Image 1 (cartoon, one colour):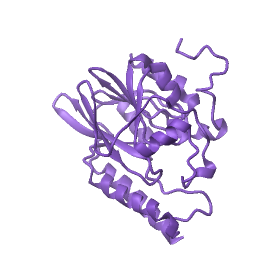
Image 2 (tube, helix red, strand yellow):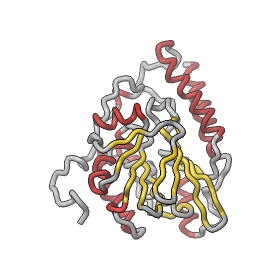
Image 3 (cartoon, one colour):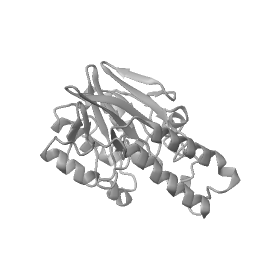
Image 4 (cartoon, one colour):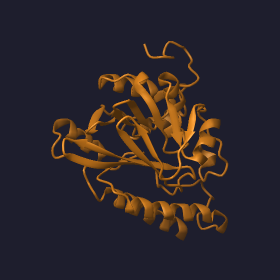
Amino acid sequence: MMMGAGKADDPLTRPIAPDYAKRWLAPQPPVRLHGRTYLVGFGGLNVALIRTSAGLILIDGAVPQAVSDIEAKMRALGFSIRQVKLILSTEPHFDHAGGIAALARDSGATVIASGPATTVLRQGGGDQDDPQAAWLERFPGVTKLRVARDGEVIRLGDTAITAHATPGHTLGSMSWSWQSCEGKDCRTIVFAASLNPIAVEGWRFADPAHRRFVDAFRGSFAKVKAMRCDMLIASHPLDGDAGRVARLMKARTPNPFIDPNACRRYAGRADAALGKKLAE
């Protein structure tokens, strides 16, 4: 039995907005993406797992009610939550960070995020500067936190992961990249934070008071377009990812996720969406 599972009401896995969150939690089997990188998330929320020589790394934690499924998917792959040493966070929103406190408790892992994100993660949301603030649910706060700087290389055993500050969707958004090898076939994988320029009704990107968000987005778009990126994992799966997972489970070659233009397209679509927002 997993830690905390015997409690009738575990405050760290108590469901958040369960009816709304169902749209993100479509069943998806765990799958080895490439080399020692795996997907253990859902149809609408990606969670990545990286096996290193010194333990496991998780990226993101979905919503609290998804934690038991994430841990079950890890077991199906032959891993234990207790092997997780680091949890990397892309953004301090409840859909990506809501489950991190429970996963960190069950594993004993250290959570790593950007400086601005650690403040929000520690308090479990409540960032009133967030363009989506009125929509966002609070989530269990995270305690064992470490700040990563833009460009910092995080090392665990034989694996190095680079932190890339990609603010805009939140001012603390962080994307992550690492090299994955299958024999001599080595690829750079990017787990990209959301670049979606979305805000509550009445919050306008064209308002001069919100210029820092526009500038942040534009800097992030340029950075992601320029990244080395052979394979893209977006925090919310892209159109077609479900089909790619299904194909990958049937045959590993050719790998349907290999696409050196994926990051450029991802940032390009977000750039176009911001342009529409600015024209409103």
